[in-house]
Image (tube, rainbow, N blue to C red; front, side, top):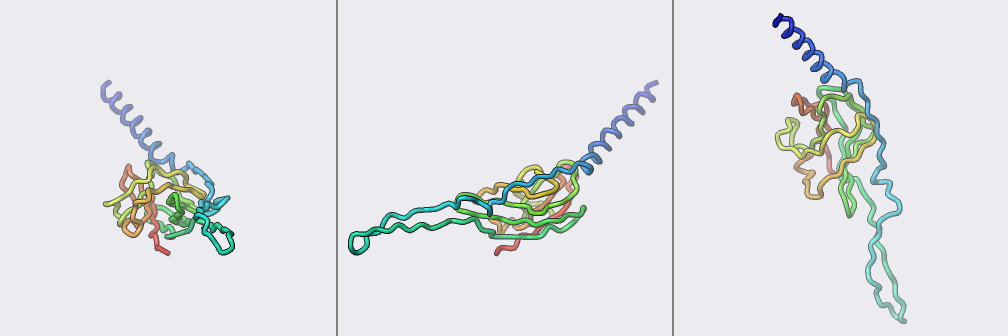
Amino acid sequence: MSKKIVLVLLVVGFIGLGYYLISPVFRVVETNEASPLAQTPPTTTSQPPTPQPQDTTTQTQAIVQPSVVARGTFLPHAHAVNGTAMVIQDKQKTTLRFENFDTVNGPDLRIYLATDLRAKDIVDLGPIKATKGNVNYALDRNIDILKYRYVLVWCRAFSVLFSSAELQTL
């Protein structure tokens, strides 16, 4: 009788584990977040008026537009992938953006910035937001993108690199 109970528990456990491992593959999460490059209206900074001859004053404004400072194309490792990763900066914030991104889902997928493809020295940006579409991840302004130049889609549960993009500064 106890062998039957153990066998049933093993079968139920394997079914549960199989569902955990296989089910994310069939879930497509699509998101299309607005690009920081499409900001409207543009941010402006003002300088104080400068006295001019004949008592006229002028005011100059510098428009601070967001710009792409680094870019890389996603390459497959354990799974197929499409899309581009880019770092966009403006005066207030830095954003890691995935454009035209498309990959399979998996258990416990995380987005890392890393110094190499082995994920030894990383900045964990959190769980993957979407497996398809255009997605933004906020970056701390203190992150050195020259040091952390790899974007990794990493399966933390099994320590597997799904895909990566090497950021090239522009």
